Image (cartoon, rainbow, N blue to C red; front, side):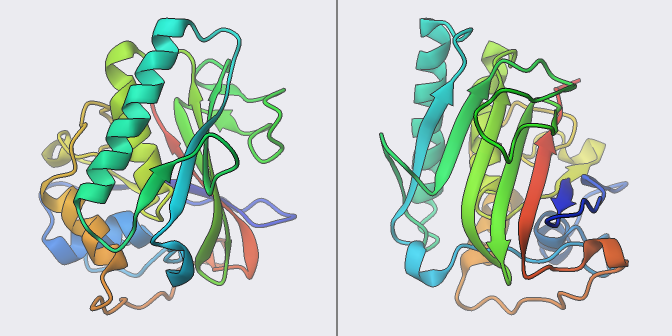
Amino acid sequence: MALFLALPGVLSAQEFVEIAGPLDDDDFYRAVACAARPGGQCRKPFLRWPDAKRDHLTVTLASVTDALQDWQRALYERGLDEAVAQINALDIGVTITRSDGPADIEVHVVATPPGEVMKDTGVPDLDGAVLPLGRVALRARNGLIREALIAVSVKARRREIASVLLEEVVQGLGLMTDIRSPAYRRSLFSEDSNSVVRLEGQDAMALRRHYSPATVVPSTKTTGAAHKDTPTGIAAAADSEES
C-alpha cells in the first residue's frame, strides 16, 4: 500500500497486496510489514521507530482546514484518542501520548477532496501528493522512522473517521501496506473498507510482532530496484475511500 519517495527522485511501489484467501500469521505479517506476497520476497523495507523513542512517542492533531466544522473536529479528537488507547492497550513496547505541540506523529486534516492533489497544506512533504482519503508519509533512515506525517481529507465520512485515524496511526508505526481480499474486509488493513475501530486478531498480532524483541525479521531483500531501502527518504501510504 505504499508509494516510496526516495529524495530527490520518486520511486513507485504497489500500494496493496492482493490475495485470494486467508493468510497464516507469518504471511499476513510480511504482507503488511514489507509488502511480500504469500511465500514471496519483501518488496519494501521494514520500518520501525528506534528503541530510544518507543516509550514516549507523541501524536498531535497538528492542523485542520478552515472547512472543518466543530462537530467534525470533535470526531477527529475523539478518534485520535481512541486510536492511541487501542495501540497502548496492546502493550507492545510502544507508548503513544497526545501532545498539543510538536509531535513525532502529526495529523493534518486537509481541504483536499479524495482523489485530488494536495496543495497549500503548509506541509511540504504532503503538498503535491494525491490524497485518496488518508495518507501517511514517514521520514526514515536505515529502517528507523524519524517522523510521521498523516493527512486525512475533510471529506471523510463521519463513520470512517475513527477507522481511518486508527489505520493511519498504525501505519505511522511502520505497517505500511494494505491487503485486498474478500477474506480481509474486516481487517484494519483492508484496501477496500474503512470500518474497523478495534485492534484484534491478526491486525493486533502484526503490530505486536513488528515491535517484539523476540521477532526474527525475515529477509529484507526486496525485488526490483525501485523498492530498495534508501539511506534517507520518505515512505508514503495512501488509504482509499471505502467502496
